Length: 256
Image (cartoon, rainbow, N blue to C red; front, side, top):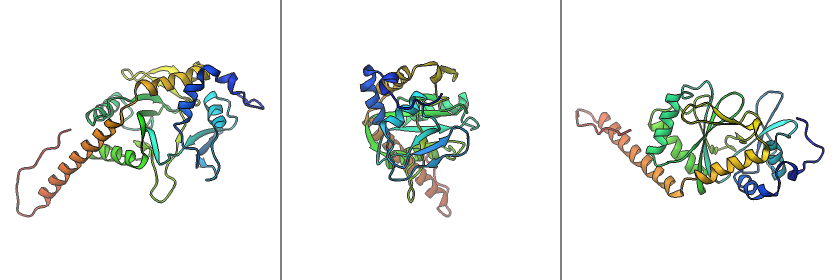
Protein backbone atom coordinates (compact mmCIF):
# COMPACT_ATOMS: atom_id res chain seq x y z
CA UNK A 1 0.00 0.00 0.00
CA UNK A 2 1.41 3.39 -0.94
CA UNK A 3 1.90 5.89 1.86
CA UNK A 4 -0.25 9.01 1.84
CA UNK A 5 1.57 12.27 1.19
CA UNK A 6 0.84 13.27 4.76
CA UNK A 7 -0.01 10.76 7.46
CA UNK A 8 -3.41 11.40 8.99
CA UNK A 9 -3.32 9.77 12.42
CA UNK A 10 -7.04 10.25 12.96
CA UNK A 11 -7.81 8.35 9.75
CA UNK A 12 -6.16 5.18 11.07
CA UNK A 13 -6.27 5.73 14.82
CA UNK A 14 -9.34 7.76 15.82
CA UNK A 15 -9.59 9.63 19.12
CA UNK A 16 -11.02 6.59 20.90
CA UNK A 17 -7.63 4.88 20.49
CA UNK A 18 -5.55 7.74 21.96
CA UNK A 19 -5.05 6.12 25.36
CA UNK A 20 -4.17 2.74 23.86
CA UNK A 21 -1.82 4.37 21.36
CA UNK A 22 -0.03 6.19 24.17
CA UNK A 23 0.44 2.90 26.04
CA UNK A 24 1.73 1.19 22.92
CA UNK A 25 4.11 3.99 21.98
CA UNK A 26 5.53 4.13 25.50
CA UNK A 27 6.94 0.61 25.08
CA UNK A 28 9.66 1.49 22.61
CA UNK A 29 13.10 3.05 22.89
CA UNK A 30 13.46 5.64 20.14
CA UNK A 31 17.17 5.79 19.30
CA UNK A 32 19.42 3.43 17.31
CA UNK A 33 16.36 1.90 15.68
CA UNK A 34 16.63 -0.56 12.82
CA UNK A 35 15.07 -0.86 9.37
CA UNK A 36 14.67 -3.52 6.72
CA UNK A 37 13.54 -2.80 3.14
CA UNK A 38 10.33 -4.43 1.99
CA UNK A 39 12.24 -5.43 -1.13
CA UNK A 40 14.51 -7.73 0.88
CA UNK A 41 17.96 -7.73 2.38
CA UNK A 42 19.09 -7.49 5.97
CA UNK A 43 18.35 -5.10 8.79
CA UNK A 44 20.44 -1.96 9.09
CA UNK A 45 20.71 0.76 11.73
CA UNK A 46 19.54 4.33 11.54
CA UNK A 47 22.00 6.96 12.70
CA UNK A 48 22.44 6.88 16.48
CA UNK A 49 21.13 10.42 16.95
CA UNK A 50 18.00 9.95 14.83
CA UNK A 51 14.88 9.67 16.93
CA UNK A 52 12.06 7.37 15.89
CA UNK A 53 8.87 9.41 16.08
CA UNK A 54 5.36 8.43 17.15
CA UNK A 55 4.25 9.05 13.59
CA UNK A 56 6.76 6.61 12.07
CA UNK A 57 5.76 3.89 14.54
CA UNK A 58 2.07 4.40 13.86
CA UNK A 59 2.66 4.45 10.09
CA UNK A 60 4.39 1.08 10.41
CA UNK A 61 1.52 -0.31 12.50
CA UNK A 62 -1.06 1.09 10.08
CA UNK A 63 0.71 -0.58 7.16
CA UNK A 64 1.42 2.67 5.33
CA UNK A 65 5.17 2.98 5.93
CA UNK A 66 6.25 3.13 2.28
CA UNK A 67 9.65 1.41 2.30
CA UNK A 68 10.69 -0.32 5.50
CA UNK A 69 9.88 -2.66 8.30
CA UNK A 70 10.90 -0.96 11.54
CA UNK A 71 12.43 -2.37 14.70
CA UNK A 72 13.77 -0.96 17.94
CA UNK A 73 16.58 -1.68 20.36
CA UNK A 74 16.08 -1.54 24.10
CA UNK A 75 16.59 1.33 26.48
CA UNK A 76 17.86 0.96 30.05
CA UNK A 77 14.50 -0.44 31.18
CA UNK A 78 11.70 -2.33 29.48
CA UNK A 79 8.11 -3.29 30.27
CA UNK A 80 8.35 -6.41 28.13
CA UNK A 81 10.58 -9.25 27.03
CA UNK A 82 10.32 -11.30 23.85
CA UNK A 83 11.42 -14.85 23.12
CA UNK A 84 12.12 -15.05 19.38
CA UNK A 85 11.78 -18.53 17.87
CA UNK A 86 12.34 -18.86 14.11
CA UNK A 87 10.19 -21.14 11.98
CA UNK A 88 13.11 -23.50 11.42
CA UNK A 89 14.04 -23.76 15.10
CA UNK A 90 13.85 -27.07 16.94
CA UNK A 91 11.67 -25.24 19.48
CA UNK A 92 9.10 -24.28 16.82
CA UNK A 93 6.71 -27.13 17.63
CA UNK A 94 3.97 -28.00 20.09
CA UNK A 95 6.49 -29.78 22.25
CA UNK A 96 8.95 -26.89 22.10
CA UNK A 97 6.34 -24.29 22.93
CA UNK A 98 4.95 -26.42 25.78
CA UNK A 99 8.46 -26.73 27.22
CA UNK A 100 9.01 -22.96 27.05
CA UNK A 101 5.62 -22.15 28.58
CA UNK A 102 6.05 -24.67 31.41
CA UNK A 103 9.50 -23.33 32.26
CA UNK A 104 8.28 -19.73 32.40
CA UNK A 105 5.46 -20.71 34.73
CA UNK A 106 7.78 -22.75 36.97
CA UNK A 107 10.10 -19.75 37.21
CA UNK A 108 7.26 -17.47 38.34
CA UNK A 109 6.19 -15.89 35.04
CA UNK A 110 2.53 -16.82 34.83
CA UNK A 111 1.47 -14.81 31.77
CA UNK A 112 2.70 -14.50 28.23
CA UNK A 113 1.31 -14.02 24.71
CA UNK A 114 2.11 -16.00 21.58
CA UNK A 115 2.25 -14.23 18.21
CA UNK A 116 3.44 -14.92 14.70
CA UNK A 117 6.20 -12.38 14.17
CA UNK A 118 6.16 -12.10 10.37
CA UNK A 119 5.30 -13.85 7.13
CA UNK A 120 8.20 -16.23 7.77
CA UNK A 121 6.03 -17.95 10.38
CA UNK A 122 8.38 -17.41 13.32
CA UNK A 123 7.09 -16.77 16.82
CA UNK A 124 7.43 -13.90 19.23
CA UNK A 125 6.48 -14.80 22.79
CA UNK A 126 5.81 -11.53 24.61
CA UNK A 127 6.15 -11.29 28.39
CA UNK A 128 4.67 -8.06 29.72
CA UNK A 129 5.30 -6.47 33.12
CA UNK A 130 3.23 -3.85 34.92
CA UNK A 131 6.27 -1.60 35.41
CA UNK A 132 9.68 -1.19 33.74
CA UNK A 133 12.42 -3.69 34.59
CA UNK A 134 16.17 -3.30 34.00
CA UNK A 135 16.75 -4.44 30.42
CA UNK A 136 20.16 -5.85 31.23
CA UNK A 137 18.89 -7.77 34.27
CA UNK A 138 15.83 -9.03 32.40
CA UNK A 139 18.00 -10.39 29.60
CA UNK A 140 20.46 -11.91 32.08
CA UNK A 141 17.81 -13.74 34.09
CA UNK A 142 15.99 -15.14 31.07
CA UNK A 143 19.24 -16.15 29.42
CA UNK A 144 20.35 -18.02 32.55
CA UNK A 145 16.93 -19.60 32.99
CA UNK A 146 16.94 -21.17 29.54
CA UNK A 147 20.63 -21.97 29.49
CA UNK A 148 20.40 -23.82 32.81
CA UNK A 149 17.61 -25.91 31.29
CA UNK A 150 19.76 -26.80 28.28
CA UNK A 151 18.09 -24.57 25.70
CA UNK A 152 20.32 -23.41 22.87
CA UNK A 153 20.34 -19.61 22.84
CA UNK A 154 21.38 -18.61 19.33
CA UNK A 155 20.16 -16.85 16.22
CA UNK A 156 17.69 -19.07 14.40
CA UNK A 157 17.08 -21.15 17.51
CA UNK A 158 15.98 -19.03 20.47
CA UNK A 159 16.83 -15.36 20.95
CA UNK A 160 15.98 -13.24 23.96
CA UNK A 161 14.99 -9.57 24.00
CA UNK A 162 15.72 -7.03 25.37
CA UNK A 163 19.20 -7.81 24.16
CA UNK A 164 21.58 -5.03 25.28
CA UNK A 165 25.19 -5.22 24.14
CA UNK A 166 28.23 -5.03 26.39
CA UNK A 167 30.28 -3.06 23.88
CA UNK A 168 27.64 -2.32 21.28
CA UNK A 169 24.10 -1.07 20.92
CA UNK A 170 22.81 -4.62 21.22
CA UNK A 171 20.25 -6.37 19.05
CA UNK A 172 17.05 -4.85 17.70
CA UNK A 173 13.63 -6.44 17.29
CA UNK A 174 10.95 -5.74 14.71
CA UNK A 175 7.91 -3.86 15.95
CA UNK A 176 4.71 -5.85 16.40
CA UNK A 177 1.61 -5.36 14.25
CA UNK A 178 3.47 -4.99 10.96
CA UNK A 179 2.90 -7.06 7.84
CA UNK A 180 2.77 -10.78 8.63
CA UNK A 181 1.97 -10.34 12.33
CA UNK A 182 -0.75 -12.62 13.70
CA UNK A 183 -2.31 -13.81 16.93
CA UNK A 184 -1.80 -17.54 17.51
CA UNK A 185 -3.93 -20.01 19.42
CA UNK A 186 -1.64 -21.31 22.20
CA UNK A 187 -3.36 -24.70 22.21
CA UNK A 188 -3.30 -25.49 18.50
CA UNK A 189 -0.57 -22.99 17.46
CA UNK A 190 -2.63 -22.04 14.41
CA UNK A 191 -3.37 -18.46 13.43
CA UNK A 192 -6.32 -17.09 15.35
CA UNK A 193 -6.38 -13.68 13.71
CA UNK A 194 -4.17 -12.05 11.09
CA UNK A 195 -3.12 -8.45 11.31
CA UNK A 196 -4.07 -7.84 7.67
CA UNK A 197 -7.66 -8.85 8.42
CA UNK A 198 -8.04 -6.13 11.06
CA UNK A 199 -8.16 -2.36 10.87
CA UNK A 200 -5.13 -0.55 12.33
CA UNK A 201 -7.26 0.67 15.25
CA UNK A 202 -8.64 -2.80 16.02
CA UNK A 203 -5.17 -4.36 15.86
CA UNK A 204 -3.71 -1.73 18.17
CA UNK A 205 -6.55 -2.10 20.68
CA UNK A 206 -6.23 -5.89 20.65
CA UNK A 207 -2.49 -5.78 21.32
CA UNK A 208 -2.85 -3.24 24.12
CA UNK A 209 -5.64 -5.33 25.64
CA UNK A 210 -3.17 -8.24 25.70
CA UNK A 211 -0.69 -5.97 27.49
CA UNK A 212 -3.21 -4.95 30.11
CA UNK A 213 -4.74 -8.37 30.72
CA UNK A 214 -1.48 -10.35 30.90
CA UNK A 215 0.93 -7.94 32.59
CA UNK A 216 3.00 -9.83 35.15
CA UNK A 217 3.55 -7.97 38.43
CA UNK A 218 7.16 -6.84 38.88
CA UNK A 219 7.20 -9.09 41.93
CA UNK A 220 7.08 -12.01 39.49
CA UNK A 221 10.34 -10.80 37.98
CA UNK A 222 11.89 -11.03 41.45
CA UNK A 223 10.52 -14.57 41.71
CA UNK A 224 12.22 -15.34 38.40
CA UNK A 225 15.52 -14.00 39.69
CA UNK A 226 15.25 -16.00 42.93
CA UNK A 227 14.47 -19.17 40.97
CA UNK A 228 17.46 -18.64 38.68
CA UNK A 229 19.79 -17.90 41.60
CA UNK A 230 18.71 -21.07 43.41
CA UNK A 231 19.06 -23.17 40.27
CA UNK A 232 22.48 -21.71 39.50
CA UNK A 233 23.71 -22.35 43.04
CA UNK A 234 22.57 -25.96 42.85
CA UNK A 235 24.35 -26.41 39.52
CA UNK A 236 27.57 -25.00 41.00
CA UNK A 237 27.40 -27.47 43.89
CA UNK A 238 27.02 -30.36 41.47
CA UNK A 239 29.95 -29.16 39.36
CA UNK A 240 32.11 -28.74 42.46
CA UNK A 241 31.22 -32.25 43.68
CA UNK A 242 32.02 -33.75 40.31
CA UNK A 243 35.37 -31.97 40.18
CA UNK A 244 36.48 -32.90 43.72
CA UNK A 245 39.31 -35.50 43.49
CA UNK A 246 38.77 -38.90 45.05
CA UNK A 247 35.17 -38.27 46.12
CA UNK A 248 32.04 -40.16 45.29
CA UNK A 249 29.70 -37.97 47.31
CA UNK A 250 26.00 -37.73 46.90
CA UNK A 251 24.95 -35.56 43.99
CA UNK A 252 22.14 -33.09 44.62
CA UNK A 253 19.56 -33.36 41.84
CA UNK A 254 18.32 -30.31 39.97
CA UNK A 255 14.55 -30.05 39.97
CA UNK A 256 13.26 -29.02 36.56
